[in-house]
Image 1 (spheres, helix red, strand yellow):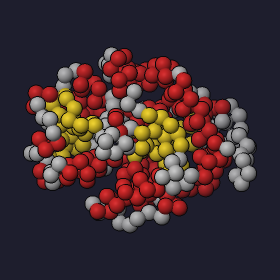
Image 2 (cartoon, rainbow, N blue to C red):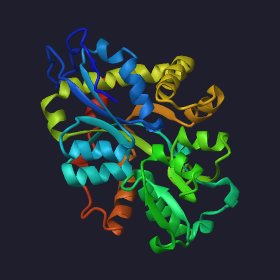
Image 3 (tube, one colour):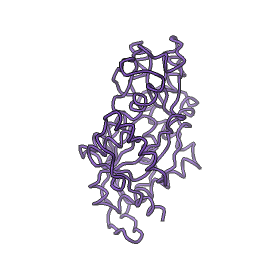
Image 4 (cartoon, helix red, strand yellow):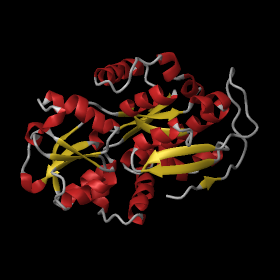
Length: 320
């Protein structure tokens, strides 16, 4: 997707005490994934809420959040969404910080198998070829938590690396036996009779998705960060009170990219997202558990300094 700039309509809003007001907000380089996890951000970009806060945006759309994380580590993008494991890797590599929890997406994530194989359990995936977005949060949860709990070691299944948006075609072509994927691709595979669900992630991990930022951006542009989160709070009201408008906007994105999807199939997919921009009081506890898992897998080398990694003050001021 090409970059698109949203022009500012006015200067940034004045902030509460302790945060300086900016005459003009900085341009935000916004990364997001084109699976369903990124669609609340896509809607934000087209809602008009950012213009009302005087914010300019350049957008960077990619197949998966771990790619956005890598872009942020490389300082190509300022803000982006992804789940806990990807954030922790990004913090370890590039000092990235959480400024908000945007949504919970555990119901959007499923382990699915080709329908004709009639696989019912994770244990049934032994010896199978499984499509996985390597380095993604959902891939890490499968490899480090779900598969081991079912008695599968990493050598018991063959990882086939690919982007989530390529997995349904691979399943249809029978080049893989199963996939670890997100909406709307799961709903498409199910509706087209290609795959059946073995499990979703909700009871294993509710998969909160965070808005992360580079440390330089939040330090240089605290006013923009607060104004940006005010826009998110406004957009959350649309998800609650005007779901038809939200659904039509996001549905338009997928149909414009050539995806053929019945409106009812899409509605089923989007209903799996719970959008609620916040900063949970118990977030550190959850992230501590995620970090311990990654430490055990030797994916990260040390426990984060949570005071540096988690920055609740911006959301507190946005709500103030």
